[in-house]
Image (tube, rainbow, N blue to C red):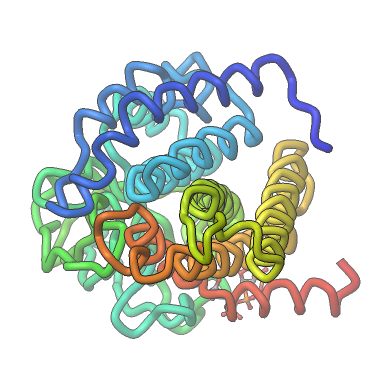
Length: 381
Ligand code: COS
């Protein structure tokens, strides 16, 4: 049993109440229309949630990693798309906080707290699981760098969405992941940075995901975060925190699907009795709740380690892997319990089933998480 501080419990309760009142009622509509919930993001910013992991001196709420997990999971319990927007934004906040210069922090962090969205740009057409295979180049020209390349599947980027971008680019192609990549923090208005194709997705339809195109995009050397050559480490250590966020999103969604399954199976009468009086179905529910709880505890454990500044890559990957698999497992069984009705758009489980599927893929597939976990365990970490 994890015991929470007063601050952690109160953020969880506050966000649960807000999500029930404001997010759940529009979850179906934003899924159907693919509309970005900008009013929700503005409300979350007003509540301090968009700057949750930013210290008060930059306009944030100064909360810890456990609060982040609780916030994302409570939002996800009502709408996974909205939780994705929040999780990616908090990942970018975290990278800026830990890697940016003081000048960059003073400029970008207060904006982020106001709800101006951050996006993380690592993936490319030829660099998915092999993130080190990216081709976007940053060539130095005096005090500037010229960026050229294409980033794909960029969450929080759309026609009207996305304010600032963490971009990982090659500064020394010969060195690759070993000192050849650099992280840049670039604003949307930078000439040469443009919006490509916006994706039409199976799930997470309220969250904007697009291509980002860089064509002779000239940026000052002051946009570099961390040291030249440290970009892959910036990306990977940022993803440690990001994966904890996605794990939270995944167990929050699993919790939601479990609740739908319990409700439906209590009300649905077949053979003259509620279907949850059948032992086969009870065993489904037992597996669903046990796995959801295990995912939650793995995620909180990873968050607690990260909060203490201890190495957490293995734990973040275990949490992300297990939570994502659990979200898919629980949504699948919850749909099965709903029978034919679960396949129809009249019940929320149909949306949850689609939303869950990406969780085994983004911010590192389950297979990539297993690479990270096994490498750590072989090294005795
Ligand atoms: N924190 C800090 N540094 C890290 C790190 C971490 N979590 N993980 C790796 N690094 C460092 C390594 O220490 C190494 O540097 P040194 O040679 O100085 O030690 C460097 O980064 C290269 O690491 P590695 O050799 O492990 O890189 P690989 O090319 O083998 O890639 C995987 C490793 C597969 C784990 C990585 O490419 C990955 O995570 N891929 C998935 C990408 C992803 O999640 N994409 C989603 C994008 S957001 S939707």
